[in-house]
Length: 271
Length: 287
Image (cartoon, rainbow over all chains, first blue to last red; front, side, top):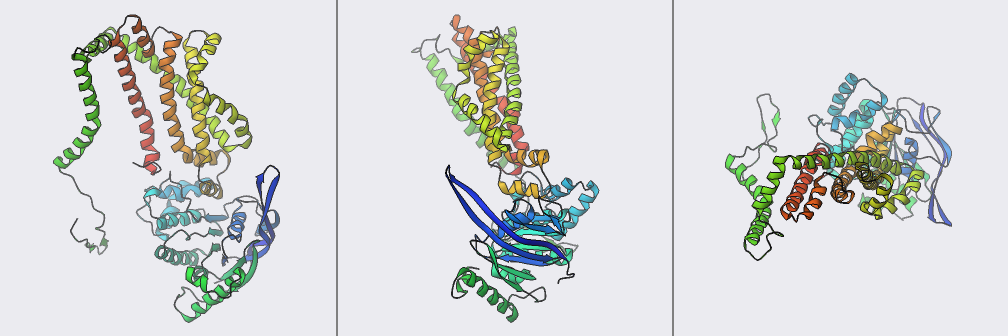
């Protein structure tokens, strides 16, 4: 489903070292990312897959402009990323929906910041509410929503100011299995319709296989790119087809190599 | 409900969701539920008043120390008719509000600043902790030396004590705002003052309101006791203290009751209404 070959997001020799002050005379340096290079094409759906602590979320936060890398560069259309910008929308694992704003005010937040006229804000909100299936909930405060609905708000909110790139940090990790699969289907629909470039962090093999054009497997401590798997199955994908199961096995094997296990069994069980 | 819920289609062919319905309570049910809550709220209070009345009329207690309720009531009515009571209430509330408003404004600003800025935190935290430990009342003798026996003295102490209280809560408020919410705000283009007013302040609001509540109650204490120390010529605290000279226990009790009632009214009117329109509406405070 890649439409053009132009590189949208380019990561070159990225390194991230966290400096933690343990005591007055001791400082711990933790290398979270070590020499990571990755090119993501326009409208491509790329998943970062890896065990916890492999730096995949760190990478995403740097791309969002929320963390600053130690060395290396990360560019969008050749422009260096130094701070958050309207060309990127971020979706967070724990939703991060503002409890003091209604559903529609949450969705409008980014548009207000960008200075989009009120009339247009209204139109976009209506369109997005339809897209994420939240019609009728616009004036409700988030505490009355379920986790899945909150994340729908999170997705709509990130799409609202029309960014070119969506950065998603384990967005469905905190949801139950049924809600997760319905949101995965929704995300595929959204992606097909909006043609956004998506960088998606996950630790679920099945999720990565179901969603991505390309899966980047990362190794832990320090975070490095260990493997890349290109997926050319047509969408929507059937999780029960032989090709899909083969793909899952291929990814799981790659991931278990990274973790240093003999086979992918534990990954299958825990997924 | 034993009835089985069946979603049916309406005339337009859309499915009607019957899992959420509204039930109108009969007047009897309304009466039953509200009567119960009124009863459990009022019963202990009424019981206490009855006990007082029995004790006062039993003859075992000195009538000057424990006057019956009707004597207290009459003393207050007399004061109300002469206008002294209203003057006292006006003067005390005036001091309270001037002091508290100044305290809330300055304390909130300083506290939020401490929560946002490392240098501000380092500079302000030690004196804040120091004055948190010093009761406001201990400042009175010194402040009287500076400013004399005046309204100004009372309001300065009030402002200072209130400011310190607000600072602590605003500071913790900002510090405990979920980092993900700040990140979300930043990712959507909020920074500087916008981030501050649109994310940090609403995020810190539950703590801010809790701080204002404590500030009001502390300020109320300072007003009443301050009026006793600074010996101004009017105010609820002053009246109680002056009544001592005449051994007028009924006036003292009456004054205490008025202070309590006013305190509750102020709390309900100002803080509860802020709470209802913000944190309670957002669900950050449980009903």
